[in-house]
Amino acid sequence: MNKIKRLVIVGGTHGNELTGIYLVKKFERSPQLIQRSSFETCTLLANPKAYEIGKRFVDTDLNRCFQRQDLHNLNLSSYEAQRAKVIYQTYGTKGTLEANLMIDLHSSTSNMGLTIILARQLPYNLQLAAYLTSVNPNVKILYSEPQTLENPYLDSICEFGCSIEVGAVAQGTLNATLFQQTEELIYAILDYVEAYNKETPLRVQDTLMVYQSIRTIDYPRNATGEIQAMIHPRLQFQDYQALHPGEPIFLTFDGEEIVYEGDKVVYPVFINEAAYYEKGIAMFMTLPIEIATI
Image (cartoon, rainbow, N blue to C red; front, side, top):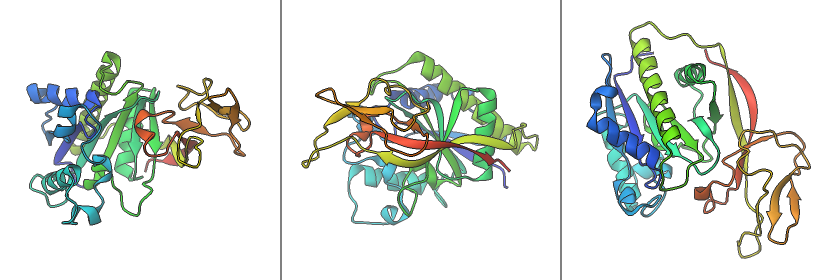
């Protein structure tokens, strides 16, 4: 693989996720923190208008606007669609500042801890993820394939990339511990890329344990789409914990338990994520698997 020449740290893909936004602002004030000798590091505040109004987005979710067919569709005129085109034309393939690696910073109202989200099982991505788990054993790796034919996520515009999802933190707020832990992960990524570029790659394990997303579950709803139950108290904030068949997952407003009816143990994540109510997602069901990093 060729060396990484340009890396982009992205914050504010969603305007109410402040961890990434304020890290980008910090790095812009003190660029020496993120510069390394063998590659250039850039920062990007992806959705400035959404940040200004304190909302996830202005017109539509920016992190679903990067399918190639959409980037080349002149009829898409929403703010986020236009913003996606600018970002792609700058940092995407053959862009004016073409990047090789993109790190997209997010935060979640779910108890995701420190999660690296991969949408592609490329060796470089896997080895980087394995290194981050060795630096901090609390890091979890979530493998989530896009549900569309093309990857719509911002980090897909580069050859390599991932998202860092941290939580639980309320929308529009900061959590100092998660802020500092995210910052340390970024420095670890930069150090890994530097070592790789200098042909002194840091040692990683041959296998990596990832949580593979297998499906999403929506809240129980009535015929008009109105929610009829809440996340069960026993499941709230239990991301990455085993859920067995027959255990409760929802509680109706009348106090009736609704149980998980699957036939095998799963590990839910993004449980009760506030931003996913509109997407019809109460949680992601995952299975832990070991994959080779080579």
